Amino acid sequence: MPISLDPQMMRAIIMDHYEKPRNKRTPHDDRYQMMHIDSPNCIDDINVFLLEENGVISDCAFDGIACTISTASTDIMTELVIGKNVQDALYIIEQYQKMIHEQPFDDTVLDEAIVFINTHRQAARIKCATIGWDALKELLDHDHKHEK
Image (cartoon, rainbow, N blue to C red; front, side, top):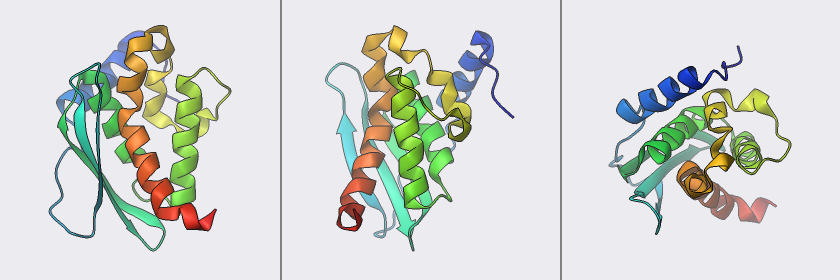
């Protein structure tokens, strides 16, 4: 079921993920990969954690300090990729980035992430909306660059 692009619904989804993030935590397990990322323009200073097993993302989490947009977008990202294989997760990230940068994209894989469709209208928020996604992409690309 597509998410309504009603502005009130979009704000409600963002606030829900900001106030009650599902995957904001620091895993204490050596099997996780971690990427630290921060923004010089915002308070965003987070770690993204990835647990990949047999080519499938079995867990994805984040922790740290982040603004509303960063927290919500990163939390939604974690929900989207958990249980996906690496190629599907990279595809989701690619479609999200295309949406943020006003390029044609596949909305069928973005679910709640579609609420960030208007981020380009506030250019200063693009980094906030993509910081966690950038970290996860770097983790996945680094881990799988030998497969390309």
